[in-house]
Amino acid sequence: MPIKWVVDISGWIGAVSLLMAYALVSMRRLDGKSITYQIMNLLGGLFLLVNSFYYGAYPSVGLNGIWIAIGIFTLIQNRNRVKRTGKKKDEGGRLKTEG
Image (cartoon, rainbow, N blue to C red):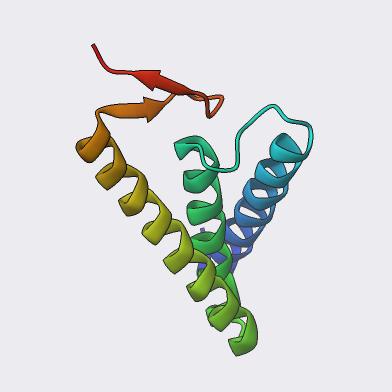
């Protein structure tokens, strides 16, 4: 498979991932602080970053780099909160107690 196809498919997967994450949060099917939402955004941003870099769309590379950094920061922050409090959220984003 030519690299251009891989890059194009990567871009489409990234776009679909970001749009699905946004739609799920907008329809209240997913909480904006959930791990699932953050991972969908992180992977979507990563795939779009690869696509943007390949095509030389550097403003989009910068935007997606920041998007990825926010996702990583949020995942780390959530992990630290769980370690500190012993509480984590279920997939819907509701707090639940470990036990």
